[in-house]
Length: 173
Image (cartoon, rainbow, N blue to C red; front, side, top):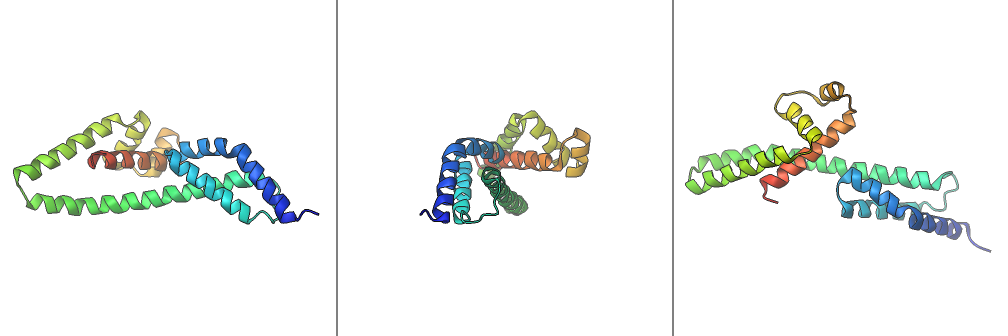
């Protein structure tokens, strides 16, 4: 006689084999990074395996996708917090550089500014528009969402995407 946990574990493994490619694609669009998407999908799979003996999970596939989506949102939240921290630290770093007016320092800062300016122009149109409205024109996320007919989550996504790309450019990545 097969134990219920083993039977449910087999269902979870079969589900993962059948849906992992699709789930990774969904997560990759959300996270913008395939390796993170694969990691989140695998972590969700492991968590679902731990819960495999629960009989109250009616739709295992839906539960798996919702769990992975929530885990991806946590990753995005951590990124946003890290980006906010970096942006808060940036003025301190720039002020420290301003004290040193050597030609090398000024040249380095000008190169950094040029990279960020170029990166801003290379942002996808909607991301650039949202970023400019928020950072340069002072609109709140809610105001931008209403103006563009987008959700606040979409505005947060575009801001995160823009910040990430601009930070990468400023670091010369």
